[in-house]
Image: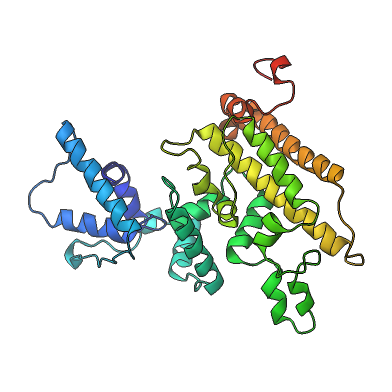
Length: 336
């Protein structure tokens, strides 16, 4: 926080604090510091005692966040030390548009609010998992996920897929609220993890086998793990930080598998709506899953090209991500 204030404060104030995370409380902190008539100095913790105090403070903060509802604090500011608005000389059309969007934010959707609260409650029970709402949204926008997969997860968090209870509101179409194969109430969780139609179980069996090649136990999946794919991918190893390449492979593996299950379901229910008994074969599901993962692997390999400049992927990152998962890997060159 202190480093950010020293480095970014001037730019934040010039831009009117538009787009700054936690701007309300950072502005109040700056306001309080400016009220002092004497210079204020900061230094890094040097002694073991000071570092221990910081560790205890962070633990107390985490305990307070996990136990009971958060306490909302009203920031205290003096108008004489409060800068408002952005400098016209620094204003751009993009910045102005962003500021307008912040001020005119749409009202929250009830379904989205409930889903986010449910995801956060699920993440709180997982050791070392981040559960801030912004982490959840950033997770589905991670550059490791393809755009169609991001759209799929975004609709899942908003409960915008036309499945299950959506059809209960459409007169004459209430029968679509039930799974055509299991004859149970349809939902995203049922489709991705529970449906007995050919596809779901086969895909996750293949995903488990691929993950175990990393010699790490597979974590039984819940729908909320998939929707919170960003924070969840960083809390896979109990008691220590999850290595970045493992998190990345898990994100790719789980997101591509979940999206494939969804596509298989849509092909069965919508593409063959005239035949409720039609199903994919096990062989076709295996071929589709292998093709999806191979396509993602090829995308990673192509992404290391220098033609993408600073956006290109690092070769080491790609090699570590797919290490121990390739067929005949021992016959491949070190820099395949």
